[in-house]
Image 1 (tube, rainbow, N blue to C red):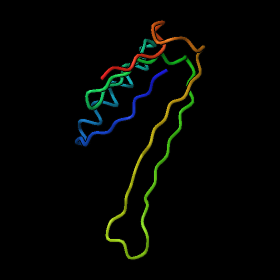
Image 2: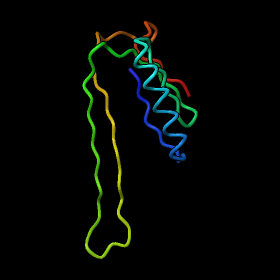
Image 3: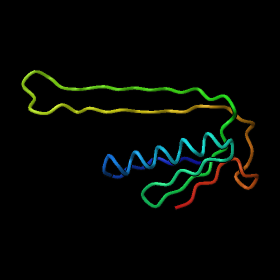
Image 4: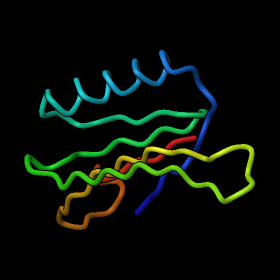
Length: 92
């Protein structure tokens, strides 16, 4: 079992390149490698994946700034195996 949760401030262009690369990996049908902030995880999505999308703008009366965000989540289920069998590999 493993988990990768990290963040890094990047330009819009850098994020767009990252998302295009991820899209190409998903489209290929092969494993997907996520890398950010020096941490890496290899995943093997199934052919059908649940896609969750959330967008929000959060502010209160009198605030001078609003926090806005977009969250993407892809979810799928596979048989559980140990890390040495290649299901999930997290590296830092």
